[in-house]
Amino acid sequence: MTTNINTVSKVMDPVHRDVDALKDPQKLLIGGGILVSLVLFIYLAVTQVIIQPVLLLIGLLLGYTLFHARFGFTSAFRRLMSVGNGEALRAHMLMLGAATVLFAPILALGLSFFGAEVAGYVAPVGVSLIVGAFIFGIGMQLGGGCASGTLYAIGGGRTVMFITLIFFIIGTTIGAAHLPFWTEEMPSMGEFSLATSTNLGYGGALIVSLIIFAVIAYISKVVERKKNSPKIAPLPSARGWKRIFRGSWPLWAAAIALAVLNALTLMTRGEPWGITSAFALWGSKVAQFIGFDVASWGYWQGEAATALNSSIFADSTTILNFGVILGAFIASAAGGLFKFTKITKGNFMASVIGGLMMGYGARLAFGCNIGAYFGGIASFSLHGYIWGIVAIGGTFLALYLRPLFGLSVPKSNDSVC
Image 1: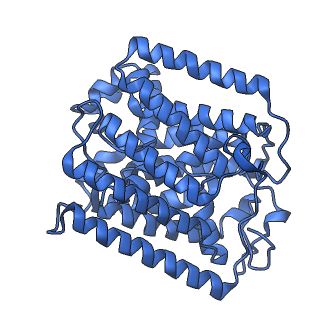
Image 2: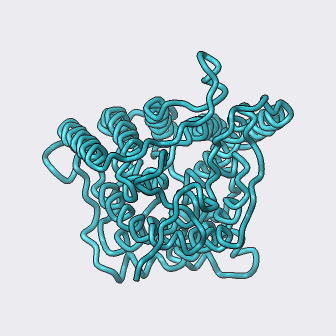
Image 3: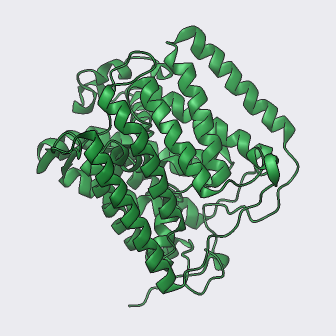
């Protein structure tokens, strides 16, 4: 049986491509975004600990950066597996390299701004991780974006991503209910850190990590040349200093900015940037409201019970998520690019299935492309590397599923991808 893989130009993709020139700034929307951000900042400063308004500012910068560079994980994996384009993957390696350089001294010395105990994201390696990452890899290709991509796409007005987010939350909540089975009944070798589970220490783990990133970047370049891969499509942009506020940023600039912001997140709240734990919290609160005995779930035992019984505004990951959405909204409006997009039957169904798979997979895999892949690798955790490899495997399978929903897949004879 042969599966037809359509070119980008022939099929409606749930991820809107900004191929038009920049338009005039949407000043009313910019003002609205800044006003909402300011009101939320003041509310957090008055009602919560100082960490929360600081994290809102970091979240705003994360969303602003993600949108300006359209810094993707979903598209990076898809381009790599479909046509061998490794431009975005090399940006990932630069981001991870910069992050590990920053994380190593922070974790080794316990550096923090507000006296919080600092810990990286180091999670077990087992069946739960492998199944979860593979499911997530498929889901993000159907849902049109990863965890961070879903948030910044919503900030940019991509309507179908609201559907992805709703079912992402539902899938994460179901995953939270099922997690004890996957972690307690399925085989696992436990946590493994390149820094603390070996004799390398943080200095040695840093050197090993940088070598791994360099090798991956080199291999991606060799594959790209061999396949003569199409380049990434250019994005609209202003010139000179105006580019900071309007238009696209180079991937390398966004990679470094994201690494710095993740390090600031680590020093502010004591753990790296994450996204999907907030989705589990939101979904569980809704489930509890409609009558489910959420408090009895193994996921919400111990210290986690405090979050379930507290305001969502006390949850640091929730505040980061709000910041990402608002930052992306302001960035899109500054470029005159905010607009709601069309929902078709195909991308609606793909978003439902993709959102559920990403949500469920994220819980099983102890995080998403941010918490597990970015945060895990930057924390020198073996589970982060395995997450990336397995999620790429899920991406490969999804290349043959996307056309069933009318979604595009790059081809080698495309002019750009």
